[in-house]
Image (cartoon, rainbow, N blue to C red; front, side, top):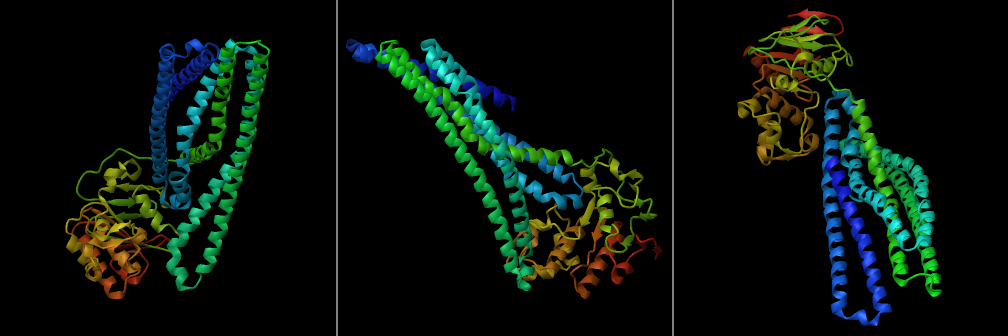
Length: 520
C-alpha cells in the first residue's frame, strides 16, 4: 500500500508538471501566431510544437502507468481484505459463523469491489488535486494575479459542498449495504428451500418478499445516485462559474490592453485545470463511498471475530484417547462411545469442541492427556474423520466430494461400507456425476451416504459421527452401524452422537449429557 501511494504521488507530480508546462507552451504558441505573423513558419514553431507534443505524450504515459498501478494496488488490497475477512470467518465457532455468514459473504462478494473505484479513480484524483491545483494557482498568479484571486475564492466552495454532500451519502451507502446483505440472505435461503416451498405450494409468498426486498434495495441505490447526480451538477456549476469569471476578467483586460495575450491565454488554459481535479474528486467520491462503507463493515467483522486459540502441540502415537472431564467420559481406541441426550443440550457442540472449533459445553477436553486447545489444529484435524449433521458438499463431481478432505485409502470399500455403491449404480455418470451446492442433485439419504463414505474411508484414528443414520432406511442403517463397529474393532476411537435405539445398541459406552452414564 505504501509503495502504491508513493508511486501515485510521483506520477501525480509528473502529470501536474506536464499539464502546466503544456498550457504555458500552447499559450505562447497561439499568442506568437496571432501577434507575430512572421513566426508562423514551421521552422520557427517546430521546437515549441515538439516540446508540446512531448509534454502531452509524457502526460498520457504517466496517466496510463498511474491507472495501471492503481488497478494492481486495488486488486492487492481487495484480495488482502477478503483474506482477512475469510480468516476471521473461519476462526468463528460453527454456530456463530452460521449466524454471521451473510455479513461476510456480502462484504467479500459485493462490498469490497467498491474499493476498486476508490483506488483507481478517487485516490489518484485526490493526489492530483493536492498537487496540481495549488501549483496551477501559483502559475496563474505568476502571469495574472487577478485571475488567481478569482480562482482562489471559487475553489474552496467545491470541497465545502463535497463535505456537506458526503455527510448525506454516508448513511445512504450504509443503508444500501444493509439492504444488499438482507436481500442476499433471503435469496440464499429461498434457493436452498425451493424444493420444500414447491412441495407445499408456498413459492408465491417467498417471491413477494424477495420482490419487496429488491424494491427496497433499488430505492436505496436510486436515492444515493440522485444525491450523486445533484452533487455533480453543483460541482460542475461552481467550476464553470469560476472559469467564466476568469474568462470575463481576462477578456476585459485584453480589450483595454491591460495584459499580454500570452498571460491571458495562459490564465484561461490553466483555470479549468485548477478546478478539474476537485471536480474529478467530487465525481468519484460517491462511488468510492460504497467501498469505504464496505471496508468499515469488513474491519468491524474482523475486529469482532475473536480468533479461536491455536496451539502448537502435536499428538504422539498411533491411537487417540479423548476425555471430557466434567462429563466423566473417556473415548478409548477400539470402542464406540455414544453420546445421547435431549435436543439442544450441546451434543453437536461437544463434537465441535473436540475438534477445537469452539468452547466445550461440558468442561475441559483432553486428547492423549493434552488439552485440545494446546493442539496444532491443522495437524489435529488430519487425524480426525468428522461427519457433521449436514455433510459438507460443494459444487463439483461426486468423486471430488468423496475425496474433498483427501484421498481415501480404499474408495470402493468406503462406498460399500456406507451403502453408497448402490447410489453410484443409479447415477448417470457414476463418480463423474456433477452435483450442486449442498449436494443439489442428490436426495437427503444419498447425501448422508456420501458423507458416511468419506469418513468411513478415512484412515484417521478418531472418527466423529453426528447422527450418522439420519435419513437412512432400516436395512441401510443396520449396514452402516455394522461398518462403524468394524472401524472401532480395527482400533479406531469412535464417538457417535445419536438417540435411536439401534445407534445406542452399538455403544461400548453410552453417555447421556442429561446426567446419566450407562456402560454397556
